[in-house]
Image (cartoon, rainbow, N blue to C red; front, side, top):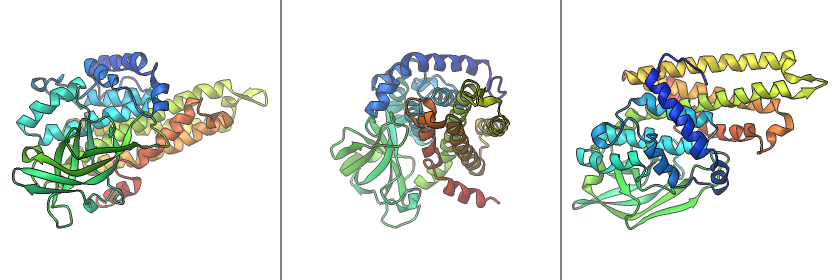
Length: 381
């Protein structure tokens, strides 16, 4: 991990040390068990809340530490660099995505009800956008919320939902008017204990094994009108406003995990021998590592630039999309080359590089695929 990055100050460095200790003491001893089980223990959420890792940007009146987004970034970077992609994803969805919507669009009553319990880990939050057959096409969603007196009645299905097995609260993207397009879409808070809410099985994935991922079913769930998050019909504008932060978090996750893969490989090539010499002494190895180091340096510089812009409320969709596209694609190339240096051992799951390789693949998909990022960037040419 790079040290002395100008975007952070001493307070963030101290917080980084506490996150690092938390990862070593509370995650590392149980991580393989969670990977095998496909889900982390619920107790990790409470522990994370007690340690100040959950929603650190929430203002003090709502139970938070009143930090800035750099505290969130530290959590992402440290958990990702530690190789704990599952917990990193689960915490990030809760901290950086769901909490962001509540802070930006929640009513005073909604904030008072949910934020303190999200900070403590009593409540785990998920966001349900993707549906079977829609992928990145949010305008194609079919989950409906029909007004019935003072309630909404919600029916539909979502898939690939992180925290789906664990969540107590879901921010659901629904269609509140029968017309197609973006204007009839809204965000509604749905409590997981409401009649009609049903979880599918915990989905088996290539990587991020300890991050629970589910289908969610909404069978005529009745929720009060007060569960509407923001204005009716305003979901697309809300999503476009919050997605740059989500894409920045993915870039942060990706660059930290890429750095971990590089550091592991740099050490390994000094130990592994071929033809009587460490493979790290061969020119081919040294030159390829030099290229990867250069890519990482460029990636860190750009992600820090985007982080600074985000703190100043200047991060654009174009910049966030560029960060996600370039860094996740670079990450994919880097971890593939790093695994190659490990030879046959790199293909064995007992070697961490194998898990890092598998965990890297989804970062080019979720939060908007690389193809969608290119489309967004091309609109700004």
